[in-house]
Image (cartoon, rainbow, N blue to C red; front, side, top):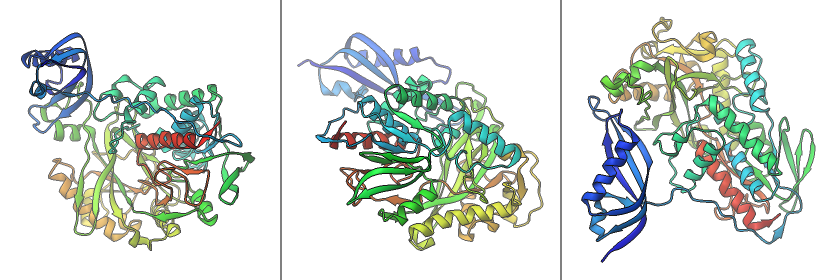
Length: 537
């Protein structure tokens, strides 16, 4: 009996790194023909491309090819060469509720969660107002340059706060561990607003800070064009509510009447956390991670992972994700930036915070990643305020260790192991503040001993997987503290409403429900859908 379908995926097509997409299509066509699967009007496209570097002497690209057309086959066994093609582009189709909105919805925060939530609301006629404590992308660029040059920190417009949130000035990494069909939709929206097409099929997509800045500007422009409004330099200070229903959002620029509020505040809005806790909103403490950034030469990491293929321009620079479990806790690498730099990510006076950033080309001399250790609720007393203070105390200690002028404390891995600070960086040079804002100091001066000891042991373990990871002149820069939110704002799993509230929607990374650009954007979209399911505009 003849069977039909409109699309198939031919998986596991391994080709040399200099092979073209057309060669992958040819292999797919041959495999289908050998399996006696006929395709009329065939259209081929790359569904996924990843790197197989398990054998350093034979690095390959691994393709999955999507085939669309009038596809016929005789039996299910014929599909052994291909898999059913699920449409990755899950379109968010809203269900509109019956309850009228008393005023426009307000989205607090313009990170990926807030922007994608507002975009979805704007596209469906809800005309959201987005309030953002920080400035536009261009204002953020200026503030970051001033901080690097003059050590003058703007606590509202910086690497953490402003248009696009913390992700704008990172690597624009879009890898997510969540299995959500909305991921492809988010990627498509990024492409429509200026991201490169390759993010639609790369296994480890990234945009790069230089391109992401323009993408964020375009999304904001689109929200405004659709009747929404993004208000910069507008800080959230509280809410006005009666019996769990919010009627107005309070800001430093005055009150904003509203019918519903989305809290997309980001993981660094500690003063906002404190206001919410003081106001009685239900939160719980959660685990997070702290540590340092480690820097190697990009060419060393490439050689260790790609062998003789290290200089292959088709591969780009090598990426890694490593983890190591001790008897007590886990240590892992996070936010790896090939060809990037370590950036000054402070948002509070008197604290030093580091993060990683790279442009789309990833052309920097060093590669870096966070190496962080798990912190459990029991480590800080299982209290939301104590969770915030735990992170803050590390940042303040790092500030003092660095010289109290926002210089970052650094150390070579060899000195970290020996316990003696006696080696200035030479072959591998630090990139924090262009290498001009660093001070030699021991991590034990600002991190708990259990964190230092765990990271030290983990780096040796990582060296068994990537030769040279534990090289003695690798640079460790601290402190990395903003890996995730220290608390979670409680919400109902189905309605997404905050506990005890009728029109308050906590969302995204800052609320404790996402981790990274893509998952935060998805949470923003699904929160918008939940709001629309209850309200009509």
